[in-house]
Amino acid sequence: MRKPLYITLYALIVLCVAGGLQSCIYDNYDDSDDTDRGAVLLLRIGTVGTSRAGITADNELMHSLRFILVDASGRIEHNHHATLNNGTDLYLHRCTVTPGHKKIYIIANEESVGTEDGTSLTSLLDGLGEGESGIENSLDHLVFAPDYNLNIPMSSMYEVDLVTGNNEEQLYVVRVATKFDVRIINSRSDDVNIDLFSISSLADESYLLPVFSTPDAGIYTTDGVKHPFIFNSDFSFNPGDQPLHWADWLKLASEESNANADDETLADKRGWIMEYNIPATATQSVCSWDVTAIETIKSNTVIALPTHYYPEGKRIKDSSTFAPGLEQEYEFKIQFSNPDTEGEWTISPEFTTVFPNLRALFRNTHVMLDITLTDAGVKWRIFVRPWNLRVQPPIIM
Image (cartoon, rainbow, N blue to C red; front, side, top):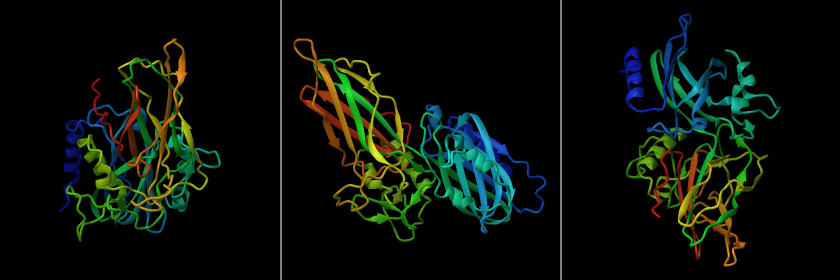
């Protein structure tokens, strides 16, 4: 039995406060004139990779949110846009629509997305009224070149069945980005300057919504076996388990990785999303970070480089026993200089590594890399997990 909607709304407001969410906005759409509609819908829209400690970066919050309900015939039934100036990670919305099967497109920070003809996504979507069709063709394969100096776009699409009366749906948006955090630990006996840091090969364009390469896309685990989007705490896959929506699975995986930040094997045990496409027009190339602003790193000190964001990638590994034709491979490279006995700065060889535990770079992937410079060379440690706000493990010098 469904709870009365006013009880649910009260409970949600209490949870927003008690749960420590960065912010929570409730928007009650005025549907008093919709007397011919019979499905009251309460939408709860959250972000995957949400901070419980109030530390979410501002550009990673929802500063605007749009959701479009499309009925079974492909016609728009509800097109709602909200401006959220201060940013939020949870948004509540109530509206009245007709019962039946719906697709719900959700886009956050659409102002950061341009279309191929140079117009803004907002202009395109603002022009769509109720009863119009064709939105699926416009959004399902929309390609753009992200500018991560702006608020990070987020998206998802759910299919739901609404009944006459009260309906409640918890939905999530996923950031259309991958995130890289890098720390450099200078354990050498001398100071160093960083001359080069690069990652290859990363894409320059992205689909707004994920484009899966097969209708039954799932996850691949350590045994190289494909499974549906099942999430059991014991990592089991049992007959009768109901697959989750891919974004719901990512939400649970993100929370799990937050609780087990030091487990470097967790990604392999939980599974990787590998069956997706990147745009045919995307170029995958070496991305060199700007190191000119990095000051000299004193001996026995640690610095954190600015966070970098990139579109999801798909650099297929030449030979794989994990998931042939699907497993990916990414290369990191660093070069530094240090003073010689005469006080002159000499540049080191290039140090390169390929990480075996970064098997895919699907959206929402968070790569945290520790690079330790020693008198003997370079040591690398990588943590790969769904997007979360937990800091990297502490370093004791």
